[in-house]
Image (cartoon, rainbow, N blue to C red):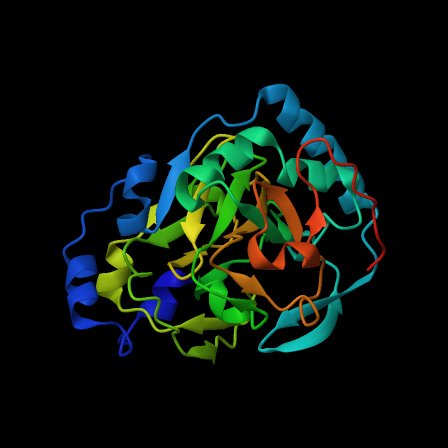
Length: 292
């Protein structure tokens, strides 16, 4: 599907020098945090233990079993009600102490700190579970352009593998360098059955530079909120579950908490000028669950 999305389109909004960088890019996985600013992503291996992942899987299985018949999601550019799917398990952390504790796990925050610095806020999270054989694809997109309540560019997504993930079960792919200059690319409707129902223009040459982020459960990648990324459908016989957690630099990013759909949590360091608007979820703090 990602190939279909790319065919016969041009990246008209991309800066010429950035396009040239990506056209000449040889796909290699970046696992060096010091290269994050240039590459737009970084892989961190074996962050959580096998025992921690097993506990996460048990909780995830229980939450999937409790899914309602319908879910309200943002798809095709509008908010709508759809038949429930485990790809649409958005924002579990405000209503579950378990998922909030995952989001503020010290080893996860250590990885985030390496790319964003010591003062961190948690702004969103999303469990994306692609079931075997019919898990939805995710067309090429940027994250930040969906978040109108967020102002600033020091924002990242942590993509943590709950199951082993590879090309065959629909691992995430990134196109390095495409965050440079923080372009806000125009979205169009895909007209297909995919997670978002929206995509952005990508050429075949750009897609040729995409890096599949294959990883074992307990590993994670961090990507810039403007870098292009997506994933194929899961047509394998194995599940592909991931937890995406969104963090921002508390000093350089502002959140309109009145417009934001979930509370913003201060998870490490200091909260900057807007600290009083955030829920204190730093180590040692007990945070009550809420109903959304």
